[in-house]
Length: 117
Image (cartoon, rainbow, N blue to C red; front, side, top):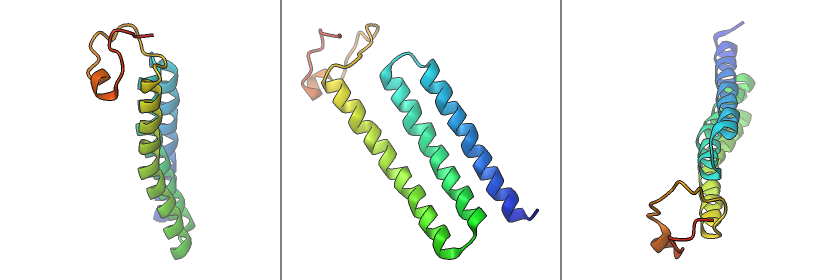
């Protein structure tokens, strides 16, 4: 086994570990917003590591460049999409936990701060 294949397997195994952490975060976190945070941050890192590992494993120049570009697409699009979903669910008053007493963004987003349902 060459160093290149070992490095590719390392990146792919790291990606799998991040994916497991994402699943644990989705199962263990209490509300939809912290779950979205786990999905955005950790799953983005998992996708980027998988694309790096796949590009190293393939090791053809143009195909590897395409795979790296897909990784960059994940790096930029997943956090923006998650932010848009979180903001839309916040504005529509979806699953806001009762334990949040201070809502710093309610005035900015045009939401009543006394209604947390």
